[in-house]
Each structure stands twice: as structure tokens, then as C-alpha cells.
Length: 524
Image (cartoon, helix red, strand yellow):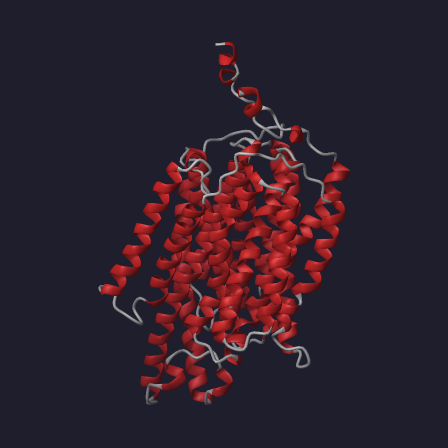
């Protein structure tokens, strides 16, 4: 009996370099599809929300909806990858993503767009985590740093190319913003065909499969309640109100129940025995800061350039290049250095220091800041993200058995995405409040009666008179720096967490050796 349950997986042999590269061709395209889906939209989003007559809160929720769905589903996909056929799961997620992308393109109002973006987030979460899980099943942790450089490069190209492509689409009259969503479809078709042909991942079938639906539901409900509260508190209701008690208290209660469920079930979605250990816990805390950098930076900088500085979508995409160039260079170089040295902590620490400095610089910007300075700050943020993001995943993957790689990778990706989701929601709420206050002050100084679209921070600037348009632009430009001050503070928390990581060498084997004591009692 014990031999049956403890039998090592025959998949414990690493693949040859050529086989890895063949499989990576499809996997990297999948990752590219998932990443570009967000970045293509980011620069065009002010135009999209303006065309659909949306508000700043709806702007935030178009982003938050996909992040929330991706965040809540990530640990589920990671756990399913430990239990079922990884290749089949990846193919299913590609189909979900493709269909939802088409639906987003046909949305007629912001409500529909937010709903379809949530469904798209399910596919995005699956594509990102399953790619990492499959790569972890093929490549040893020490060699994985080298291939993580390719991952970082693809993510950087998608993040750089996405805004440029989105800006060009939005600025091309015969295409229009809807093609920002339609453009993902051909990529998904090609990725599906490549994976069908090249991906060969052995599946270890288990008869004792148990999926933690209750835990997944409670986690999603708890996180959703808190994010909805953050979005509306201060505007729709007061901080001290029954709505705050219901949403914030209910969210905390649901997450407490989820923790209790995860401690009782046999196959938890978020394995507490993994994330409660020192190294994974610290790596997860640091990942929260990186998540906020990744999502908050790209979402609100694109808005700053267009609304605060008056650039078009294409120009705004070009202006984000320094940040993405930083990600590209630092992830590629640090990935190779990690593989050579077998150490991750020095690069994570250096990355988080640079990330904190970059956010501190962005916290000083207003609607007149030199673009050279802003580019330097963005470069620092990009370098910090590139040096720390994938290496933090590697830290956790190095500490767990191959049979738990999906759940462990899902856990850190979940918390990183949670950081991004909470970051976008919190920063969006702070920005909306600050913008409303700045507009009210600007209108009062100009002797213009407050009210209408301008007072609400409308993103449809074309419909506003020129004097009000100038006030709205200044309000957004001056308010953006305040949200990055919050990001800098959170990055410091991530830096402190990374400082307490234990230095450890990356292992040369795919799996951890089983403890001798597990086999000793066989004759007892």
C-alpha cells in the first residue's frame, strides 16, 4: 500500500534542451497571448470607456474584473494541474480565453464589458499559471533561471508591444477599439495548434482526486467583497457605515472561513502547509508588492499620459517603453546569472530596492514633470519587476516536491495577482477621490459651477468645453503621483520580507528526494 502511494513519478527525468525549446515555442506564445490581452487594452482603455460613456470607477473595474477572476481562479487551475492532464487543461483555458475575447469586442456598454472581462480573466489566470507549472515539470530549478529569462523577455515584449499595438488600433479609424480584443483571437488559434503538436507532458493519474470547491468559493467571495468595498467607500457611503461593516466585515469573515476550510480538506486549493513555512510566506509577501508594480504601473501610467498629459494612445504606448525595456533586460540578464550562481536572494533584494526607488520617483510627478525624469523612474520600476518577479516564483518552487508544484506555483501567483487586484482597486479608488477633489477646486477657482460630467471625472474629454478640459487634465496629472507614493510604501514592505529570506541554492533535480524515514517503517 505504501509503495503504491509513494511511488515516484516516472516524469522525474528532465527533458533535453531541444525538446524543451520545442515545447517552449507553444508555451511562450500562450504566455504572450495572456499578457498582451491586458496590455493591448491598457493604453486604449481611456478611449474605450469614453466611447461607452463610463466613469473612473468603471474604468478601474474593467481592469479589476479580469484581475479578480484571474486571481480567484489561479489556485484552482494550479491544483487541477496537479490532479489532471496539464495539456488538456491548457487547451481548455485557451478556448475560454478566445471566446471571451470575442465577447469583449462585441460589448455594447461598460456593464457588458466588465462581465466579459471577468470571464476573460478565468482564461488569463489559467494560461499564466499552467505555463509556469508545465515548465516546472520539464526543467530543474537551477536550469529554470535560464528559461525564466525567456519568460521575462516574452512578458516584456508583450507588455511593450501591447500598448503600441493597442494605441495603433485605437488611432486607426477603420479598425477602432474593438479590435483591441479581437486581435487576441489569431494568437490563440496559433498557440493551440503549436501546443497540440509540440507539448508532451506526462500525466500521473490519481484515483483519490478531491477538489476544494468550498475553499475556492469562499476565497473568491471574500476577496470580491473587500474589493467592492474599497471601490465604493468614501463615495457611495461613509467609512463608518453599515455598508462598510457588511462588506469589510463580511469579506474578512469569509476569508477566515476559507482559512479554516483549507486547514481541514485533504486537497486544499491554497496549501497552508506550504505557504505557512518561512521561505514561501516571505516570498509571497514580497510578491504582493511586485504584483502592485506590474498592474498598477501599467494601468495608471497609460491613463496619466493620455488624460493628464494629452498624448494619444499610440504616443502613450511609446512612452511606456522605458519600463518594459527595464523588465526585458533585467529579467533576461538576472535569469542567466541565477542559473550560473544557483542563488536568487541577491537578485530579488537588488530588484526590490530599485523598484522602491522607482516608485518613490513616480510619487513626485504632476502634470508638468519632465518626461525624461518620468522615463528614468519607469525604467527603475521595470528593472525591479524583472529582477524579482520570476525569481520569487523560483524560490517557492525550489522548496516543494514535484507533486505539489502546481499548488505551490498557484499559491504565489494567486497572492501576486491578489496584490495587483487590490493595488488597482485601492489605487483606483484613491485616484478617483483625489481627481474629484482636484476638479472641484479647479472649477471653484475658475468660477465654473460644479456639476455634470466634469465634476464626476468623466473620461470623455472630447465632450467637455476647453476650459473644463484643462482643469480635468491637470486634476488627473497632479493626482497620479499620490497613488505611487502608496506603491512605494508597499514596495518597502516587500523589500523587508525579501531581506529575511534564507539564502538557498537551487537544486539540480526536478524533484526533492523523499525523506528516508518515510520508507523505513515498511517492514514494521
